[in-house]
Image (cartoon, rainbow, N blue to C red; front, top):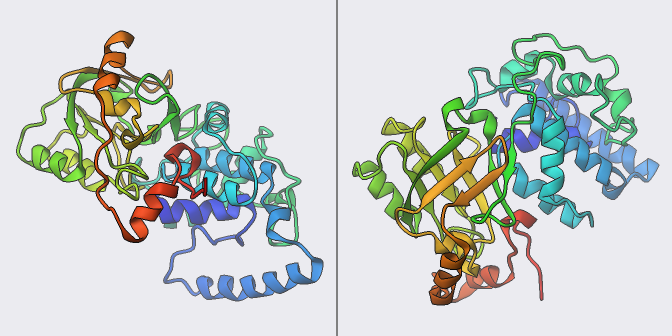
Length: 361
């Protein structure tokens, strides 16, 4: 359940994709049929005057978030869905995401969380089968219009779950909560995001000393150099939307941690983001980011970091007055890029908790 697969599945869930869009393997001839049917669907919507904003309603985004949590999608969906909502004129804040996650059971454990894959989900009935399970507990708005010209309820009415090992029944989920959790605390006053369905049980609650790095490359060097020990919490900052600039994907550090045999004992916190392939206690999108003076910029080597995923909290065990004193001494860093498009991007981009959208002030 990597990022591209995740967003393709959510395209179905939100009503903007035909059935199979998210799960049919690329090499199947079914892909050609979906492409052709997409053309027919476009022309049909034109005749019926159905427009994207008729489909992309607040209720449709809530459906997408619900399916997101049931599938255990990539944490990058917590960037892309708010960004799409912004373009549709809808406010989709991360508090809503947590509310949805708290009431939505996790029905699928696709790789990297488990040992099943997209083709297995496709054979089990796909996204519509997951949605049918969710509808049994009234977790979806079935009246939302879709690109098929029919409502969500009409689309999923006769779809069956063909494999309860791939798609758990709503009565027997992998977890009672959704696959993604949004954390808050004195490190992340706005948000931090973790794919909890890919976190081993022993790391759901963790305390450890901070190992602080101001760029991805320094962290990777330390990990491969054997400088990171069991129990450590790697902090990679100045990698957010403005600080990067561009919010780089921290797949290499998470892969290095796993490769060094530390995947079940070391956590990683960053204002950057992750790949859908990342696993473990990897907490990203920490907002506000370091480049704008977010508290992650105030963490010092050896500070004790407290992670409590079940209670949605992320804190550094440092008194408020000490953090306030550190803030007085903090100075913004020189931007890594000072001209060209990336410099303009860094000036205009918003925080990760808002989808890192561009705004003109």
